[in-house]
Length: 378
Image 1 (spheres, one colour):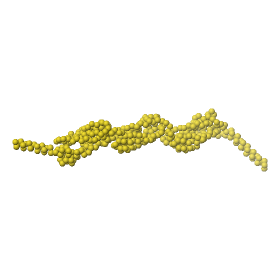
Image 2 (cartoon, rainbow, N blue to C red):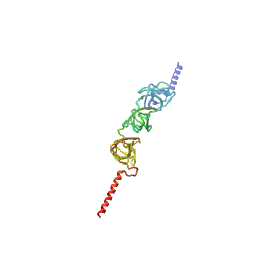
Image 3 (tube, rainbow, N blue to C red):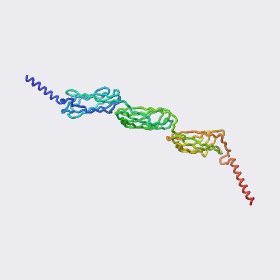
Image 4 (cartoon, rainbow, N blue to C red):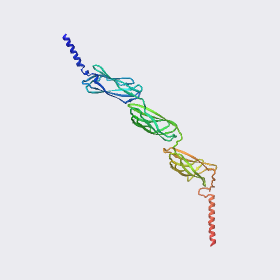
């Protein structure tokens, strides 16, 4: 019996010697940290989960494999089939690619370490999924849009998410619409932070402008859209040139119209030009009258000269001007000339009219008479 006893004792000792490294036990292996990039996923996002472990025991521990499994947040990468031995006080990291397949909430994919000799370590890793997108709003736009007129529109992008968004940019889109710049880069937005982008929009027709915000959550690209209807109406701030104090004067060959032009709007009228319109024919010396720039509440005198047929009772006075963006506008004021009697024409250019000849003759007779009377008194 003694030989059998010694055989059993030898086998036990040999087994103990073989399993010695694992004697530290799974309890000596702990998960020291876990992180995911991006910190908060959105549904469908792919992230990188990093897990760190440490051997707190006095002996090395042999690890067979490392795995990750779960639902809601599922692993996409393979497991670690052969990990090897982890020395005392040493650490090791494992990286898994995961995807958020579930809804919103906190999910717990399980990290599993299988040891060579016996047992395993199971550790749930919290992963948060939140689908809140970036917010978009219009903080400045004109009271009304006008065909062909450039207007500034300011877009604000905010980040209500609990983690940062990167690569934020705004892209304006729309048919019949010219936008400058074609896109605006805001960059990274921290949680609760915001950024703005200013666009110059010039609509050729009533349309719809769409502002698309593109950003990244980690390596994942997301978009959000803001729709801005563009309809035409009278701009309450634009320049409004008005003609006042009009006086129609007789000319030898037509009319001379004098008056004042005033800007009753809230923006400057630039390159203001005044001229008579059809059926009148502009004549020298004031075929057109150049006023220049009229600031709000400014006024300037003007005069134009013209010819018109005898049966014409109204003459259109046309004001042409531009805004700060170079867009051209016109305004027309009708001037009544029906009660004005035209003077008789004196014939070709350079000839005196009949009334002028009579005045000259009378003045000459008066001078001759005065000379004759003076001569008789001597």
